[in-house]
Image (cartoon, rainbow, N blue to C red; front, top):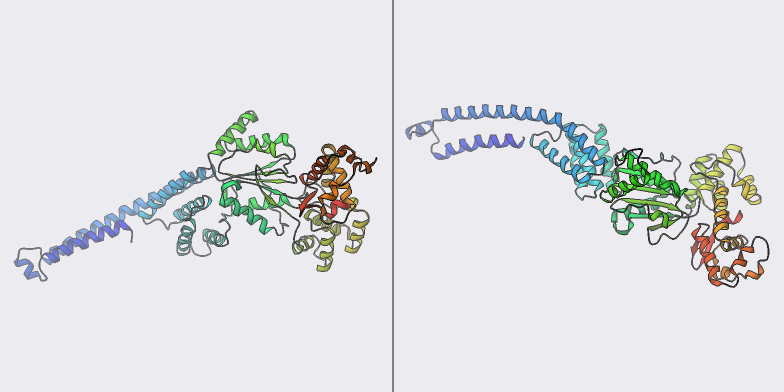
Length: 499
């Protein structure tokens, strides 16, 4: 029974009880004392009953008007949430829900939908009350709408994701969104994605995180998958291709226009300034900066504030700007699953042999799977070609969602290394003659420039007898993403060595 009806019934009951307690239990006794007869008490109850009917009618009319208004207010709440005004959106939605509850309309379809919106806003803000609100909402949806209703299923899924520590998903992407569609072949990486989410939820210095690893290890695909899995956490998600640093400002200016902070023809500098000022004051946004190479350049574009940033990079040097999340090669089981998604006829042992030779590198696995499927090449023949003609083989096969083949990606890195760090390039060539295992740094530092002569190692002559220059060259291998540090040494990926 609605609260207002309860109050009316209580008024009737209290007045009758007062008459009863005032005196008599029989008509005769009450009449003798000149008090209210039972007949008049019944008349009073009838009048109060009529008052109750009128109150019910008034409440019904009020509820009908409220149900007309709720969808309009819901739309306003959605607009506020999409623009990052989560606190105001939550305040308005909370007030409307209380009005619905007072009018016994909190279980109407319109109010249930608004309650869902409110719970999702609270979830995005990390409010501890969100799970309990979702639980109450699920019970009311089942009672009113039934288990088969889409809203019931959505709320149930959101509550289930809370139980696993993941954010509740609405099943919808934010309005301001420019991320590529989900890769249907994406495999594994649950731990890396979960770690990104955990660090963002703890806050602090982890508001900017960099996914760092070899070229072709899958950093970009992990960033795309994170954006889709955690879309419910954000009202704004924007992808920035940083391969050409000169275009970063233009892409941020486009976001400023999307948020209606700047008009389309305003200069990029002004648009970015407006955007950074806005993001510093709002939460619920995610910037994904892909293929960044210069931490100093990226720093100037970061807005600060309570939002989140994911950077992908092959290079190092992010320690003073971001928390690094290392991205390594796949686990063998994940590699087998990925390559068999391209070649379902492959036996498990064949897929495992290919994964081992390809060093569990996702880009190489995708290329190999595509090449095998397109050319009907037997796995054993492919392995023979890979060992005898690695550079050519790793140029073949579609790279799927990757912008370059593995050979092209490594080639671009080698070109940059040659331009900027000739000593590092010479050391990389030394590593290519060694076994694909950890190489002690002291071996590389001990490389004597005089032994270089002319040819592929002549970059060592630039170091003369300068141990510091040699160590700087060693560092460039890690910084350019050709090697990873491991227990006092460096390790190149086996395919990088082969090329």
